[in-house]
Length: 325
Ligand SMILES: [Zn+2]
Image (cartoon, rainbow, N blue to C red; front, side):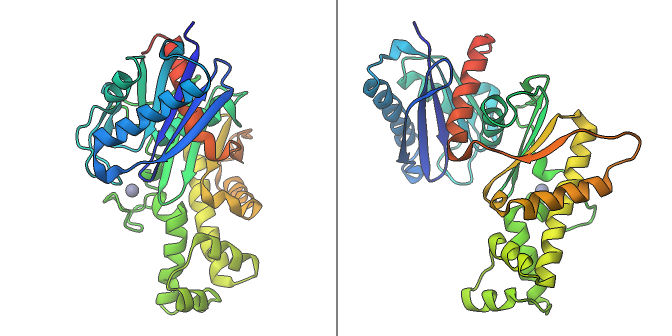
């Protein structure tokens, strides 16, 4: 009986593939370089070969595979499984990725979904969101990716491109965002924006112990900013407060939008631990209305590096069971 699922996390650098049983236990996983510059045919071939390899290693046949889930960054026509364009895979233009992968894997049912939504779904079904039905998810990296789960389903929007939470405007006329808007939460609360805001302040002449890091290394990371804030540097403290305040504003806005049980942050910056989470919660408590007491939990994700493959496989299983694919 077909009761295994393959989850694929297609990134610009690596392809991660995981084989899962019907209780979403990881049977085996592998990772291969994407080889994006060689074009979609080669990339798909690598995805298919990795998937077949995992099945073979586990003593399974293609018939044992129920469905395939693929997570990748947009913009894409997700309902039709087509990657429209990709910043880290420039040769992918209107590429029917979902069907190409499926045809290499026995034409099993497959689903293509935005990578942030996939990670959100993984955390919702197998991580910190396991016990809830409504959840907000935000990844803090180069930008801010988002996912929204309402009544146990991902919110996808008419074209499948929801939920671009990073581009919700929190400060009208604020900092310019890479997307062309101004004042997006991503321009304040992402790891890159945290580092960029510190760099700009120092270049504008502000005193900070980060100045030496910038002179010596030529760049500052968000990790540096949190470290120097911990050591009491005034500018670094102001910057991380600004990061936390931006994220807290998003929490207030999202609470009023969907009333989630939890708001979950992930990405490299959560390594800052309570120096980030404690500040977000403090700003949230200050900014939120007083009409009634809110019980939303603001927390960090728990799944770690396998989130992408877990989410993709789990989403494939859900779509398969619901008859969506
Ligand atoms: Zn933006």
